[in-house]
Image 1: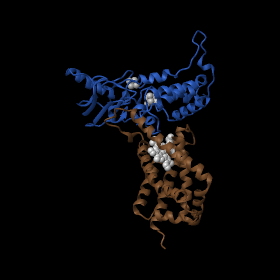
Image 2: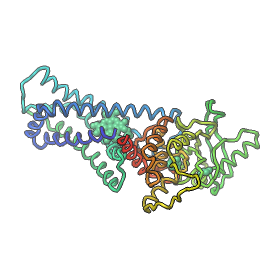
Image 3: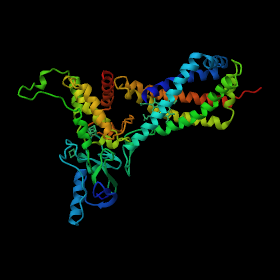
Image 4: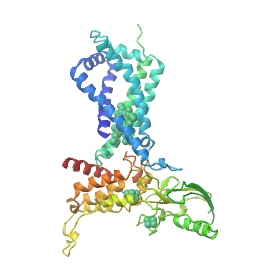
Length: 208
Length: 248
Ligand code: HEM
Ligand code: SF4
Ligand code: FES
């Protein structure tokens, strides 16, 4: 759980760095996207590892939730969770499942399209298509708003999850206060950055 | 003060059980929570009704017997106290107080507010000890010098009274705080090293067998623990477990 979570946290930061170029430097965005899409190492090693990481993470998360539910078969009439723990920490399964649903849409939007473009339709390489394709995706209001809401829930997920994974792997020492602070900065800044990108493209459509 | 108590009543392990209302008067702020229940039971006995069953022994916060879920929190709203040390002055005149047994699959209800916590004993028996020669040539524990910091941390871990509040508070009914305190008190000392690998593996295995949940680091246990056992113990147990696994 912790290792797959930390891996996803690392991936998310990398994903953000690439995406932000779509706002500040469209040519760089095209260049990097093309590299990611046609580099053998990325396509055939890193991509499967990432997909496996996501599957391991949510499969373990669901199994964990089921097991923990069984550990209290008879529930309390009154349970004052807010007195001793954060909402984020108690609802990882809810925020996680929303993020999973979002990933379904996200994979459909970009990944399924890419796979079809490259391996089914077998189109020729086109190193400059990515920027326009991406911006077009954010034209519909409904998709933009789903992206925004999903990132708010991802933020809540990471608010607990990031620091929590250090405790799970046994790190609780003089650096823990720093890890807590970094978790708070990361879990707000990165999702907020993704939200900014989505809104930016929604409000700045390509006009020909 | 006048209170409206809502208490879980259950005749025996097999019956269904329900919340019953008990209005009560004449409660003083200086009474402990258990003394308040004594007053109620006095009344019930005088009326010829069955008194409310609850666990208690020392009534001074050292035995870990008392165990009530009070308004949704183990040992009630106060911090670093057991139910027997909780004063009624923490409540206001006219309050409704919901009193339930600790809930966990591994803590089945015996009757009313009493739960069976022998699962903790079995975790302890699985490895919470050191083997020493007691056949007349016992070595004085103080013969081995121990640095002050480690000794203090081991002592802190050893103050766990096995009350089960950590399990009761946890949304997963996990026993990680208890088990990690029991592992830590030995892991921090040289005397505990001989059996370290088996200890952590056996105690964690027993904890899982008993049906406790898995830790998701919500931190509820640490907040509710009457002895202030720290989450650092859980991280330490995770390290011990990891290193025991790699050592086989
Ligand atoms: C980009 C996506 C995601 C990232 C970066 C992420 C990150 C994390 C991290 C760092 C943890 C803490 C691990 C620990 O303390 O041991 C965690 C826990 C968890 N995640 Fe995720 N996660 C993501 C998606 C998901 C999804 C799709 C689910 C689907 C069910 C999910 C469900 C859970 C659950 C149930 C937990 C553990 C419960 C807990 O520690 O309270 N996560 N996640
Ligand atoms: S760790 Fe604290 S709450 Fe848990 S059994 Fe020990 S004393 Fe009670
Ligand atoms: S009765 Fe002993 S700790 Fe409360």
